[in-house]
Length: 322
Image (cartoon, rainbow, N blue to C red; front, side, top):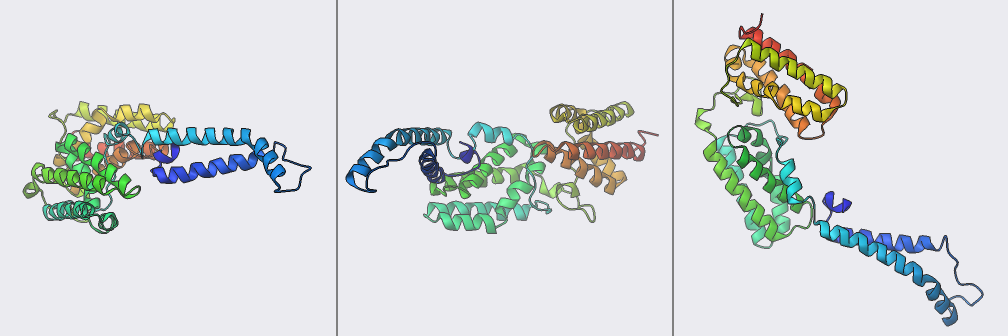
């Protein structure tokens, strides 16, 4: 089961189980007697050897069978429920490049090429396309941008991408590769309708990735001094909780207005101080990725402190704080 969670195929698990069987069988002779007093490899010796080995064979075989059965029942890779849970959080971008309309269209075409190769019985070719084209990169790079307006679509895309990644790294079953690649192409096509590329402003000079562009508000609450001070205090609480090692509590504190205001303040802040807007965005994005990934308490504590300081600077720039 542990091997499957790590992405190993059933074949790999079978080989491992056979190794476990042989190891248990060999080790059993270290704690049990072996036939003596007869010519080695004679019929009498072999009969005595088999009689002595029967309990060991049964024990080793039963244990190995249980391991393999449990592994097979667990399925290859994570369960659908586990994948869906993982995809509730933002996906780490793979490049610093913005997802433009031309780049997205190329990714859609590339994903369909992967599906075609698999459907034509060439899983190796599909695997090569997966690693050598920009299609896979785009599925990660577009996630944060897509979650702003279409979180359900972003999660659906993430689920299919994870399933495809598992298949590419595992059994390479053509039918699964083709099915998930077709789904991804469809989700990316929907994303092209959800994102208003024509309305995107020019990126901040020197900035790249998602934060080169405004990230959009997530609520219609007005920006007030009281709200901003409350968010700064909550962000400092996130830092304190993470510093004490309580990452779940830190995540809960971050999930309220401490997070929301960093989005709501983004556009007016960029109009006043573009670089400060980028800095705040990148700090918050780092927090989002850390909470959705490794959940390193030290990184979360340090980044939350940085975000709190940037929110204070933002308040002064916008005249909300003195």
